[in-house]
Image (tube, rainbow, N blue to C red):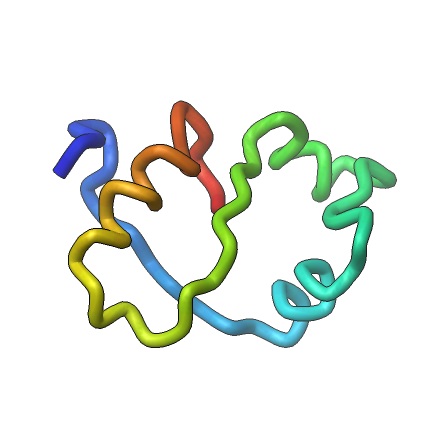
Length: 69
C-alpha cells in the first residue's frame, strides 16, 4: 500500500534463506551473488502469525527504502 514500486511481494522460507537469517551476522558480502543484496536488506522482527493488521505499518517502517526484508 505504501510502495508503488512493489507489484509483487513474495514470502518464502527457503533452506538458504532460513540459514542466513539464523546467523547473527546475516548475509555476508563474500561473493558476487550476495553482493546483489549488499545495502538492500531491511530487518523486521517476526511477530508470529500475521493476524494483526497494525503490523503492516511496522513492516512499512522497517522496510523503508530497502527491497528485501
